Length: 460
Image 1 (tube, one colour):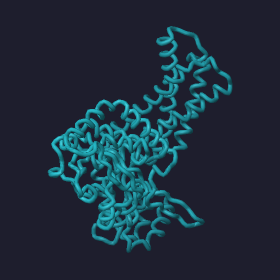
Image 2: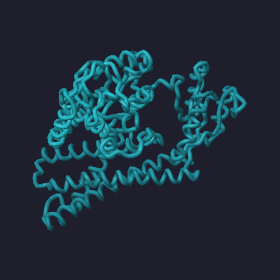
Image 3: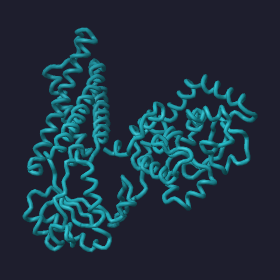
Image 4: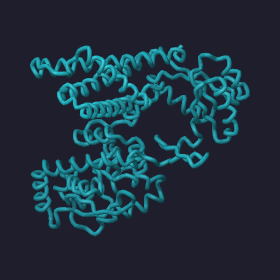
C-alpha cells in the first residue's frame, strides 16, 4: 500500500510546498506594504502578475530541493537534514532571484517584501516538516503507516539491525523475517527468489551478511534487481565504517574514504573558522573586564605568572602553546602530570576558577590565532599523546580537526580525569557528525549547563 502510493504522496507533498511558497509571498507583500509601509504602492504588491512570479519562483525552488534529493523516499534522514536543505535551497533561490532583479533593473521592487518573503517561506516550510515528523512519529508508534523489511542474514549484523529498528519505533520500520541457514529464518538463501516473487508486502531488503557469507552477495543483489525490490547493504566491516564515508572512483575501482569529515570541505571549514574569529574577538571584547579581574586574582593568589602556557598537540598533530589562567602553584610536573580534582598543586583561587572553567578563557586568544576552535576535541600534552596513541584505537583521528575549548565529550561529562577511551569515542562521534547546529548546541550546553545529552538526540 505504502509502496504503491508513495509517488502520489511525494507529488502531493511538492504541491503543498509550492502552495506554501506562494502564500508566503502573499503574506510578505501584505505585511510589508500594508502594515509596515502603511499602504504604499509597489510593483511587488501581490496581484495577478506577482502571483505568477511567485508561482514561477516556487517551481524553481522545488527543483532546487529535488536536486538536493529532498523528496527522495526515506525514513532515515533526520529532521535536521531537512531543515539544513530547506535553508540552503531557499537562500540560493532568493539570491538568484535578487540577482535577476538587478539584471532586469527592477529597482522599484520592494526589498522589504523580498526579505520578509525569504524568512516567511523558510519558517512555513520548516514548521510544516517539523509538524509532519511529529505527527508521523505518533502514528507509526501506534502501528500505522509501517514499512516491512526482509533481512538477508541471521548473524550479529542482522540482529543489530533488528535491535536498532526496534529501538526507534518512530521510523515505522518492522522486520518481516530473515533469510538464511538458521532455524530462525523464514527460508534458506536458496529460496530467496521465490519469496521476493510472491511477497508484495516487502518494502525493502536489508542485506546483512557476515564476512564468511559474502560469496552470496552478487546473486542476492541480482535477485533483488530482478524483482525491482529496493535493497540496502550493511557491510561486514560495519563497526569500523564512519557515519559519512565518501566513495571515490579510480577507473572501475571504488575507494571508500573511511576518514572523511565535512571540515575537509573548504567551504564548511571557512564558515567554522569565520565563526571562530568573530565569536572569539567579540568574547575577548565583552569579557575583557572579567579577564582583568581574573588576572588580578591569579597574581594575588600565589607567586608566579598570570598565564600558564603549556605545549599541546593540535590540528594535524602540530604542537602549539595553549593558554590558561594559572590555577596551580609553579611545579616541575606541569608537562607530564595529569591534574585531578583533588590535586594538591592547586591553589584555593585556582580551584574556584577551575570549578567554573574560568581558567580556560585565555584560550580565546588561541582560537583567534587559529591554533584552536571554540568547539572540538580537547588538546592533550605530547607526553600523553604518545602514551594514548599506543593504548587507544583511533586516538590520533581527533587531530584531523582543530582542538576546542569545549567539545561533545565535555558536555557529556567527560572532562579532566575521566575515561579517555570513552572521551575519544565521543570526540570521533563529533567529527563524524559535525554541523554548525551541533557546534551551537555544544556552546549553549557549555554556557548554560543542563543534563547530559545522548548522541541519538542529534542523529534523529
